[in-house]
Length: 473
Image 1 (tube, helix red, strand yellow):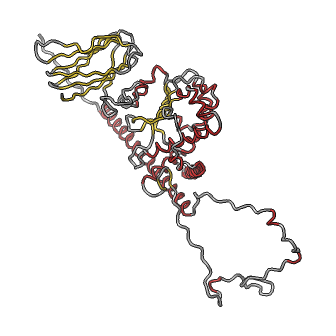
Image 2 (image 1 turned 180 degrees about the vertical axis):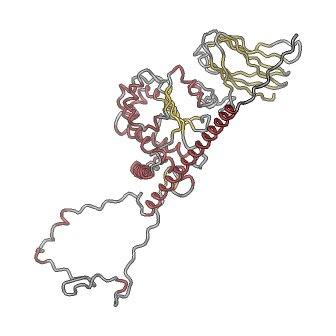
Image 3 (image 1 turned 135 degrees about the horizontal axis):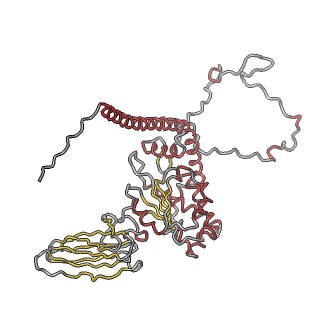
């Protein structure tokens, strides 16, 4: 057989060498430009922050954030002359010491402190101490946490210091008027609303996840107790602000801390609520406006799930409530792709069971601290997972297939040669709504493996979640 030979690599021509060198220079220049741009942006942000801090410092020194009290109005009876007095009876005012008069022109007003014959110096008004203003529990300009808060206002106003300062003043004035700090102590607010808005777990980047479920208001009793009259509506708004305030207190405002949320807006079973329930629509719009105006840059991402066909029309109605920067954080997904979209941002062990995850309330073998594995079952195929087991131990596992409609079974295969396979769970078809999560345990005296078998006879790819752990017997 003839021996195969390889042609030697062609030598680089001078033209090719020049092109390669030119490409290297362009790549290096691109990296340099990128670094320079980032450096310039950092400088611009620092300059804007320094400008804003100077404005805040001056405002604190002059008590500009303190609400000014209006003078009491003069009563009409105080304006009328006293009984028995005549306009002609008023005496001419005597000139004060040092005041310029016709008899002593040019004398002018003298400094009381230099006037001879006076025993005491004139009273000098005391200098005001800078006021202390806190926002979300953090005093302005006290430490680096204040910088993090001021940067939120700057980002909300495209790093325009004057506009950010105006927004800061407006927010502080609103907080004083709304008494947002005092709401933290009100334990009567939000009764029965714990499933409407709640924080559960964190996303893959560590942001706390806040879930909003409007379907809860299909409960007529809850709807009436929340929106029946203006007073109840105001209490709902106060509760929503209270919830936001409490959630913010749990954030980390250190320079490298997590100080934003991932918001999940669940629109499942909500058709008609927004169109035909004007109280809910009005309350939602008011709450959105308050959060938009007074809580800048607290949302890292806002994911709308189970979005119905009619929602785009409603979104057009409220589109004006949001800034362009806020709208850039929105993600919309249909009911069929909601779980898949959430998994892009949230790990299965952190995602509540009602949204396709493994996190459940109550006592279970697994918690949000136990990581899960994401897998896929191909269409019209069999998928096998092997979980190793050591001798004299207990294996615990739980599995979930999103949408199920597959067959599932489990068996134990001993490591010893010639040993019999033991059926743990007989293969059975799991329907879409039969069970969300299947959990099981297996105690063994010998080493081996538990084999989980999934058979997907549909033409759709299935998402598989599972996790396991071994406990000593």
